[in-house]
Length: 82
Picture 1 (cartoon, rainbow, N blue to C red):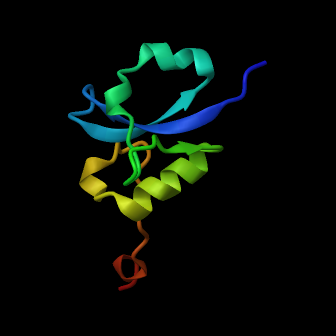
Picture 2: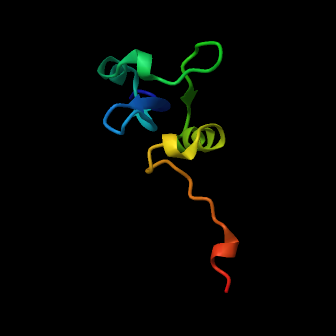
């Protein structure tokens, strides 16, 4: 059984927004390698869990550039009080 990992990918289906993709080694062939998000040294970001990838996205990327399925909704308590 292959190890599962997660990467951040620029999706043309989502108007170039960033999304999290679940991967195994053989999935690499199905993706345009130039669309994987890299760090400042050019290494593709890779995460052990989807939660880690989503956390990185939400801490580092503008919300409007994140796939809504992975965008964290920030709770503003003031919106709920009268």
